Image (cartoon, rainbow, N blue to C red):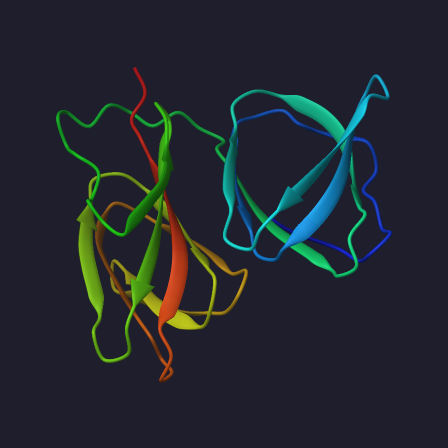
Length: 174
């Protein structure tokens, strides 16, 4: 889910009843208020990631000078155990916990990146590029998110600039 908030704009009070990974696509300043009225200010940088481990109720206001863009990957289901299969060792690991590994990849032009995964992943584009999963090719732009089933995934740049993306890798649950 992608959210865009213009300067001064705010969401309604709402809930995220399940765990989620968050990718910030822009620098932003927020005021986050909970359902009791308490609030805090938070600054984030383009490329920051976060993980919401439990249900939350909140309202978010953009108190910055530019439009804020955020992609939220909500984790709706528990993944079945997959034996001892390891997560693909790709990119720069930004964060990891018992539920997800979140990594950033940089794919140089004319140098595709190919990896295999035994679990689903979500690719969140931070620039233009292409991803192919199980024979299905998808062109991606900033903010696009692509669900990839287990299997071989290949990413490449379709421009003369590198393709940057955040990969959210789901872990199996006990």
